[in-house]
Length: 171
Image (tube, rainbow, N blue to C red; front, side):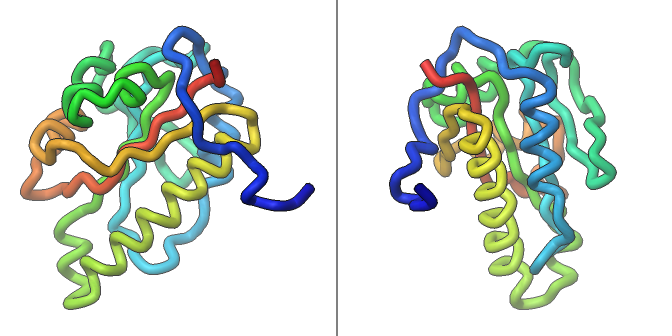
């Protein structure tokens, strides 16, 4: 029908089921675009239940590649970092956007604004990609900064966590 308002793209995330690797790959490929305002934004994925992919924390590279930063089950750590919001703890995968502080500051006075707008663009492509594949998706803006940085294994003085968004199968 073409109306965005008619699309139920945000909904509950089913904590039981996995997401397919091909689905995650399609979402990530759809997100891949040159930076519009800030190249400081980093795309990280907490993989909890993605068929064909080992659980852990990954960084997505623009060459359409995932690099594992940390191996293991990080669903509880993500849940805790996101103020114990079940949608994050129950998600098959969680997008965690962060920014390289040195790059952000190198942009001068507008760096802060540009990195937030860029993160919004990237996060929107994640959500729209999930919706296009029939998955549930939910953005989350509340989290503990230090726990979120620890989840990524990042130094909060060098990387600033900006955004969380969950995906999973529809219940």
